[in-house]
Amino acid sequence: MKSEPELRKELLAQIANVSCFDEVERATQAKMLAWLADTPEYCRISKKPDYPTEHFALFNVCVTPDYQEILLFEHKKSGLLLTSGGHLDKDETFQQCVVRECREEMGLELAAFTNSPFFLSQLDTHTVSAFHWEPWFLIPVPKDTDFTKGPDYEQEFTGHHWYEMEDAKKLTRIHEHMPRMIDKILKNFSAS
Image 1 (cartoon, rainbow, N blue to C red):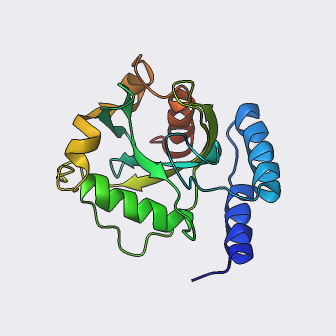
Image 2 (image 1 turned 120 degrees about the horizontal axis):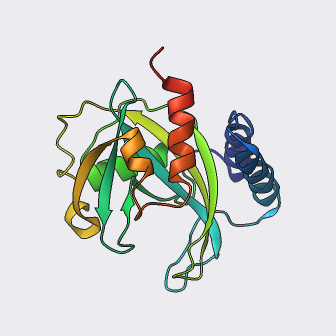
């Protein structure tokens, strides 16, 4: 297990290495780096109420191997179409969080997951007293994968669907930064 200063240094480096898509993401990256360098606690330690109110919430973005479709889940608590994801636990790397959340929510086993964050956002959740700093991770998976095997699937979701990227951007019940994240996928992985 890494010490807290080693882990914080690793998280800072991964955030700093994100190649930003636009000015909004660049500003988010700068704020996220300043916050992480200064805050004593960056993981959610307790909920109801969330403490600390500012913490990491990661998104696990399942895409087809050709990056043309995205998997969205009908999220029970928010009522939104979201990717899988969850809160970073204490003493956990971003990658360990992705692996844990994929296993818990989808039954997806990721061997040696080393992907770095692809996209960064921040969100005031409005419905609860929490502010999320959000690294998004891309996970290419075959479309015929069974995503219902996770022990938390039925607790978290009412179902899931694959969407063409352009169609997903037009959905109204999605995370407010998802259209920009999809634009970044399309820019970086468009078929030439």
